[in-house]
Image (cartoon, rainbow, N blue to C red; front, side, top):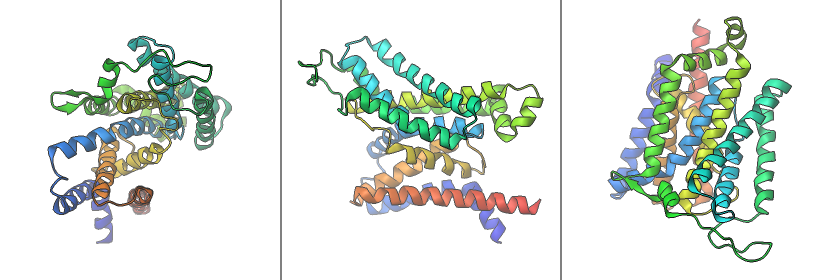
Length: 330
């Protein structure tokens, strides 16, 4: 009976939790289960989902990227500065921050694959380096329209309406960030689950030595995974800047834990037992609904981390207990 309960929780626990919290918050508030509130939840999790997708790709190759939050923060201020400080055209404002993510992903690969530093330690170091870079770049100030400059005068540019539409506009009744999130989740899902390259990623994460003997360039695969993680984090930074209308320092730091929790909750979505795009999305939805419901209950914001940590612990407990029992059974 115990084994059956664990197996059920592993396969359907995340979905059961999602249904339960929706039902509970719907009972205590008429405003919760409405189209407007649901779209607000989806918009609020769009940035976390992009971060979670980046972490997912690194976990697939048996790595881990702790630098996504700092990468997002750097991308956020770079995006805002390109438009506010330098008055560059929109296409450059969208491309250059992506290149920042590529560089950080390549730097992580250098530390992990070439030098041989363990993933956690390497990306932790990168997290601090990038955090320092983005604070140094902005001199500790957030970036906004017509801001005063330390060199004198005011900033010559402004965040354009076309750029702000990406984070604040609507398309076919849904916020634009929701469409971007759905599209990127589908792209990640198709790559990981329905392409040869996705199978190579999972094979590399499962057994790097066997992959090498099979002719797979493991270094190249890991390089690609970390670059993709950096790109997703940069996209999250661009979306955040467009949504709030300014470049906030340390914008990504509070979202790192949510992204990691979403990925590990995704392990137990339909018994996947591995990092996957759809699971990461469902994990982000669960966390987003919980935080939205707690806001409705007027719970103080400083207690939110308790909820996030508890969700992460539950997801890890179910996943590892199931894996332990399965291993013991074999």
